[in-house]
Amino acid sequence: MPAYDEAEGIAAAVTAIRVALEATGRPWEIVVVDNASTDGTPERLAPLLGDPRIRLLRNDTNRGKGYSVRRGMLAARGELRLHCDADCSPSLGSLAALLAAVERGADVAVGSRVAPGARVHRRQPLRRRVTGWGFARLCRSMLDEPTRDLFCGFKLFRAEAAEGAFSRARLEGWTFDAEVLAIARALGFRLEEVGIAWADREGSHLSMLRVLVPVVRELRAARAHVRAVA
Image 1 (cartoon, rainbow, N blue to C red):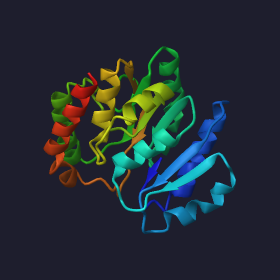
Image 2 (spheres, rainbow, N blue to C red):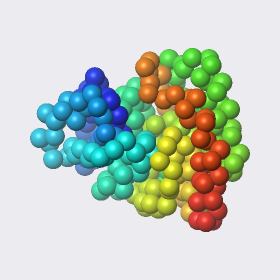
Image 3 (spheres, helix red, strand yellow):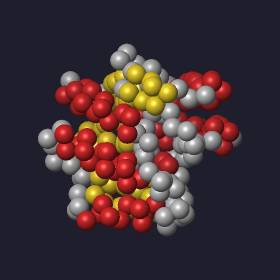
Image 4 (tube, rainbow, N blue to C red):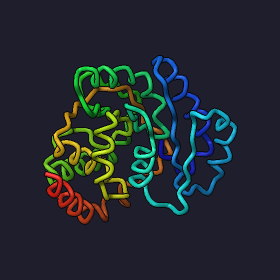
């Protein structure tokens, strides 16, 4: 779980994930990567760190969401590794669907807000949906990646796929999802989009304008990384 200035809800989010993981009956761990928060996020998480299965990694400086997710996925030790954003609690009921996709043979089960079976309880504002649709189309086109919902923060990787893709990924900003999925596909891993429950969170840290300004430069770099793998 990447976290940046999530003090208000981090303890509740980690607790919800712990409950969901315990319900699977599988061994589990939670790795939170704090991206140099300034609001006391690590301190709010501290009471939960008495459980050795919950770990906190802290970036010395703000390195971006892509860097934080990559650090956490490569530090994880499980055979299955879930990328779950700090606001993913509404999607935890769909974890079983991701696990089922892996059991069917998927190496990466991509949580999707547009795949069959998706249940979106609270949509993003219209302007953001339109901008996000255009952004995703651009990413898919430049990386030749067919996944429709690239940026949903709820994805389950087999360990081999996670290590193969994230160890080769280079983008540290918001575009990292597109690069990681395209690299995984280029390495020959099987991806499956899975419809999940999801709800937009008011007050999200994501600024679409901030994302779109550097996107072409990042996508060119990502395309080079994917071609090098292929």
